[in-house]
Image (cartoon, rainbow, N blue to C red; front, side, top):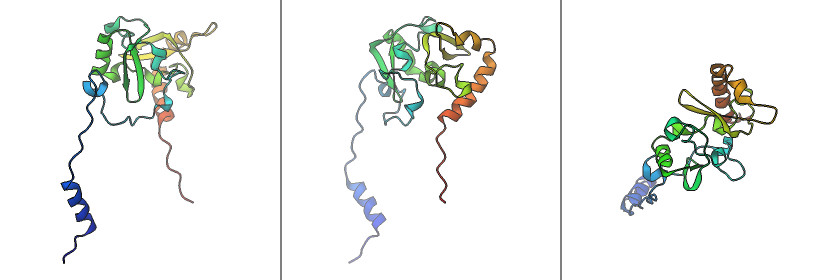
Length: 182
């Protein structure tokens, strides 16, 4: 009697087993619209400003900040929501949700939704969703308190803040290197 190597046996067993069908995405979800891979999100959302309710931008509509969405901060509605790579967004209308689904990277806030003024210092500071700037097609959010408006400080040299912020955000979100064995 001839025996097969273990690797060949595994291949043979897998070849004769019926393939399992991939679950179908519900209509209107990012996976159905092609905006997100149907596999579980591989993005680390721990760096995102998701607040107590787990919503991006405190439930504000990310598309509304841009010209095509009206150009101003607008609260989203849970009936027009989607989850993209583990982050849930609300939208003011289905049209805005559809625009987001076509190009999520265009509408997602920079630096995970944290204050664009504080990120260059590697600080994650809460934002006022109504304090924002859309610059070169990107959404930047800012802290605004009674005595402090970080947007006006950022606008004095936005190019420098973006450059330093992009560098700091890469460092903040970088996966730690594996520890060396001693």
